[in-house]
Amino acid sequence: MSSCGQVSIETMEMDEEAYTLDGAVDRHGQPAVRARTGTWASGILLLVNQGLATLAFFGVGVNLVLFLTRVLDQDNAAAANNVSKWLGTVYVFSLLGAFLSDSYWGRYKTCAIFQAIFVVGLVLLSVSSSVFLLKPRGCGDKQTPCGSHSTFHIIFFYLSVYLVALGNGGYQPNIATFGADQFDEEHPTEGHAKVAFFCYFYLALNLGSLFSNTVLGYFEDQGMWALGFWASTASAFLALVLILIGATLSRGFAKYWLLQRENGKLR
Image 1 (cartoon, one colour):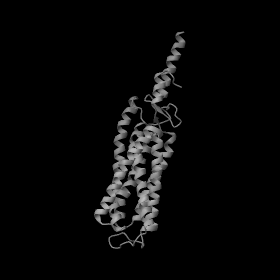
Image 2 (spheres, helix red, strand yellow; image 1 turned 120 degrees about the horizontal axis):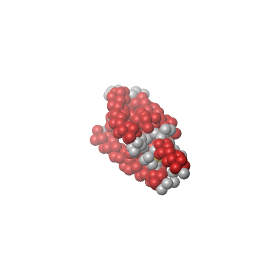
Image 3 (cartoon, one colour; image 1 turned 90 degrees about the vertical axis):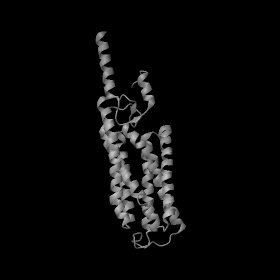
Image 4 (cartoon, one colour; image 1 turned 180 degrees about the vertical axis):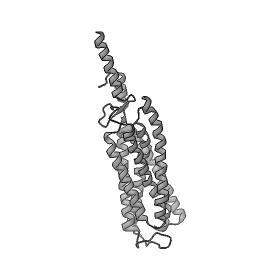
């Protein structure tokens, strides 16, 4: 009898070590196995994802006022007002993303869907600029004004930039917490790693912003708008690929798993 009891205790200890302790689940909704999911394997992918996505967003936003004045021939007040409205919608869409994540989709699915929308918006913006708006070729710098634009071209442009706002706003409130989900705070080693992750997360955010404000900002200031927008598109696409690749490695969080474990229904 004591031998059976000892085996049972050892089995329970192995289960506790095999699975995370904080209620995390894998992409199939099953309890996350510590050795095969999360930690820095997925955390690094999310850090690079954040850096690339930030680069892509600020590659558009940092010089958008300049684009509106030079390419669409708006005055400074109108351009600044339009950009303020655009930035405001980013924060409104953040509420939408947070609601969908908490109530329906979960963090991973929300991040993936809104990043896909982000990429679509950037593709449309790049096409709109290079095909419709930057006419004659090379306009939009300090010397060469652009020609007039049709209503369709203007609508197409605003549709694309607001898709960018929707995509970026929807995933931003979820990516940091999704990254935190990759580390079990009840495990001593992973708990310390979670603290480090947030430090690296904001480092990645600032590096992406720095690159877009310097390198991409320089090219756009010289009138190479299409190059800047397509570079942002490529960066966002690579970020999306990384988050899709990381699906098999990632952990999520589900309260029902924590309740199952507490009620002795661990599978």
